[in-house]
Length: 205
Length: 273
Image (cartoon, rainbow over all chains, first blue to last red; front, side, top):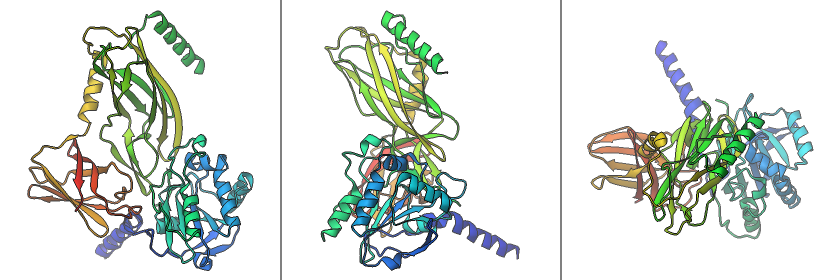
């Protein structure tokens, strides 16, 4: 009895503390793992419903200075509008756990989207983190692109200026733009993976 | 608070102008959750010789700044120097960092106190007047959250033809920082790296069996920073497993980084087979 408690306790510890680190997240070239998530608009979204479309995943934390750089400059909203207008599905994903920076309720997120004039297809709420761990999201922002065949084609930073300076948005090479342009033109993505930069994703235990 | 800082700055500037104060680096400047000061290892500069300054960070408990490779989050401090003609800088020398877990990430950085060393060179023709050495510092200070900051630091050193005398008040500070700099590994030591499916196996022959080894990668996206580094002792050293980065798509030529063995750090570049 005691032993089984010890074992299950150990298994629990492994599951809770080590699994996210040991788990093999999808790599560029792999099939993007399917997910189901609830958004701030109250709807449930399944990745599998978007076969045939490009899908962008954007990890988000409204208090992180790296995220704020791209929202206060209007860069992220511009990208969301430009690419959703071209048929891309854009999911903002919030994996901040309750009581950590960036955690929002659905109504708080809807208020934020309105105030910032953000235009993702939906903002997925992932407060217990399974979606973040499934993709190995490390930072905010951390960007992923999935092609119409369901394959992961980009994993990494939003651009090549790993700073919090708003003035660095202009003149940066935006990896998401480059990857989408290349993939839509039927070309291979020239920079398919980069070091994501930003704040740690505030996962709960 | 601000007026007091302003007053001190004013007094200091006045002092520098009038030449009352020389080699004042000890005036610290606030950064988010800490302060920094620019200090010089010597009391003066001799034309045609190198000298060294240091950026000394003090951070409140729990807060950290970043190493040259920050790991998963953050970014290293960035310095923009303003120097008189004839004085040039070399790259920052970074003491070995600490591995700092943050949520599911692993950051590489410094807590409490660190001195980043900046070697400088004075040309033979440098003007024989007090040299004002200044830097704009951009940085991010993190605990559970991150706060970007900016600061300006400065000091003034006389330029004389005498050999520069050590600034005794900072000798221990510089000595301690130099002990923490990665050094070359002894030539009799051997390292090997092999690429496996999801990991690299790094083995070292270092004269004795050990498990007290940790590898800080210099290049981003080579290894998964937060993955446990398993270290097994071997007859003459260790064998270590480093999980490949999820952002690593191509074979790499070298595993490049700082190996911490016990309390000594070594810069290593190991070809990957």
